Length: 190
Image (cartoon, rainbow, N blue to C red):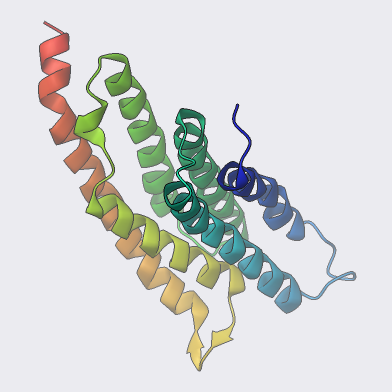
């Protein structure tokens, strides 16, 4: 396993997951709910920024690696799924939306693994739809974690709209990836 700054940032993102989740187990007598929500939202934002920054550094410093390419999406999926489960427990996101997003992540991860196994990973390379979906999620989730007024707008409302957009893009991008992979799957299964 290579050790470099981009991979350390990815591991940092994974290490921040228990922090975000753990904040919601702190008793209200230790930390008021608004402070907890603010801290959790900022922790998620910092983790999300490391996602962008580690990829940028890896490309800029020519420190890309097969391990980094594996670990980065795993860290993203763990972070998003953990946050969605917390939000579901808090009643701030609908179970159906959570199932759509988490189910898609599992499905596409399995699809990418299968496509790599049959030598056709290029057909499920990251597409703009997936990037837009990720952007919508990475803005929606901290808004839902924050759950307070933000610049005169209720962050929950902003988060609700964006998480619905993310869910639609989730289904759309999943169908896109499945359609792209289908010819290779059909060819290998004959």
